[in-house]
Length: 485
Image (cartoon, rainbow, N blue to C red; front, side, top):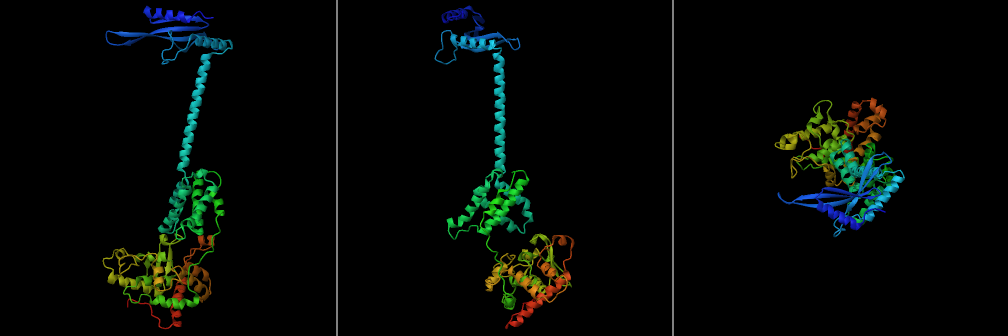
């Protein structure tokens, strides 16, 4: 039983407050002490106000390290807590703390060391939790940054230079952006096959939801989109954004089968004369039928529209010489490999016509002054370069669009060259395929054989021009190509 009582402590406190002392301590036994301390508060330069504070203190010698220790166990108010504004440890509560201390010491434990150890552990746990939270936040931010659309944008920037045209490049990106509202914000690391399948189903069902007139992706379009998305996710995997397989690969297998390929419309071989009759006479009423001349030149050369439509005079070489040709730069070629198109006399005459027309009507036209070949020289479009749809529009105006499109001219040439070209010597097929700017299927041969079969291709171009001209003989009332003469 301790020596102190509540009444005795009240008297002791009263005596302390009247004594003028700054510090006093009284013991209860069992290592428990009450400490009184005077606090001063300056009111003015002449007056100070003082008050006393009381706190319980435990003192002991550590059984662990033999050092003297002390521990505060709460404040005490001799007259009881007032209004609950301050914490108050009663005499009974202080004695309970002393009993707990005695039990710990008897067990060979030091409460101060235990408390410090617990505090250190709590601090370590808090630091570990903080680090874990920071790591989780960083990982979440990194995953958000490495989203599906981020992968799409990264792959697109890395690969767009390999695409055949700016329009095709923009079209790819426009289609890929349709994934944005569906899975675009999904982190690549968390993207699942089910996510991609669900996105594909949404894209395929959009037409049914929005009506027949809605411009939604067809099956083949979605298949192409998914192929590009697969490449984008592969790009991200290569950069450590994800471990394991590409989920788009499996999801693509769930897409409906692609419809059969529809080949570009072209006339049959026995209709070539009728076609060439109309094409030869096209726009004969115009002074400068540049668009019709592009149609005729494409027929004679079997080149792609893009390869010739954007040509400049600097691409044309030896027009008045023995080996007239068009050197098509890589950026206008499908495979991004420069190509030479050899010209027949009829094709040469077409370019000479345009050169003559530009000298007559091209003064002050910026596109002409910039060296472009196919520029409108009359009408509402004067001064504009021919558009990419110019040839198909012209075929439609001529009533031929249901029978043939611009790209179908190449199929017509290929069919008739393979079947009708009388040359049966070496490299016959190669000459035809190189005239179409087709790559060799034998990659090893393509790497070593740099022959472009120039002589054979010149013979082929001349034969094709003669074949077209001779086909007119089966039709009456033929209007021949207009010339500047």
